[in-house]
Structure formats: C-alpha cells, structure tokens
Image (cartoon, rainbow, N blue to C red):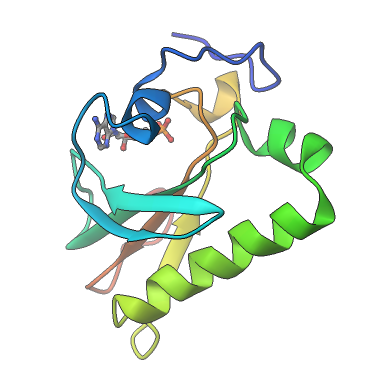
Length: 124
Ligand code: AMP
C-alpha cells in the first residue's frame, strides 16, 4: 500500500488502535508523549517501536505540525527508551520510514529502535 506521508490520518490504523487499547502490544515504556512496544516482526534482538500519542501520519506530518515542546518531548523519550533498554554502551539504530518511497506500512509516525547485536550496514 502506498502511504501518503502527509495524511489524511486514518484513525483505524493499527497503532491508533494500540493507543486506544483496542489491540494488545508488548509495552516497554510510556509517558505523556509516547508509547513504546516491541515490533511484532523483529528484525534485531531488540526491535522496539516508539510512537507519539498524537495522530501524525509520518515524520513529515510530525515535524510540520507538532509544537517545539512535543518534538523535544518525543525525541527525548526515544533516547530514554534506548537508555532504559540498556542499549547505550553498545549502541543502536533509529529508523523512521516516511511516505511511499520509504516503504512505510503503518500510517502513524513511528521510530524503529534496533539493537542488541552488531547490525549490518544499511539496509537493515
Ligand atoms: P513501517 O514499515 O516503518 O511502517 O513499519 C511498521 C512496523 O510495524 C513493522 O516493522 C511491523 O512489523 C510492525 N507492526 C505492524 N503491526 C504491529 C503490531 N500489531 N504490533 C507491533 N508491531 C507491529
């Protein structure tokens, strides 16, 4: 499916449903800005998705609409998830797919956090 990274936002997408507790997830972190949970199809020993609570289709939607306070809150939360998962010593990779050419599948902005082993060079 080709996702338009700028919307409109589909409130029935799978991550919107996770945010509403309509479908389960393996949650690892949450605060006022984000929810983070294990990817259902992990590509590394640690593969966590971090999503904002607010409805943004992709990073391009997020950076153009979110307040500076929310952008800081979300990005700080990403670092905090990685720290709490013990990834700071060996490092990790952050990826976000935005729009059709990226292969984005779920139309709710999310950041992939990958780690737990020496990752192959791009592409993951
Ligand atoms: P992207 O291609 O960047 O849109 O990535 C979407 C990611 O969401 C993929 O890595 C999927 O494995 C993951 N995913 C899809 N549905 C779920 C779900 N219900 N719970 C957790 N991860 C999911």
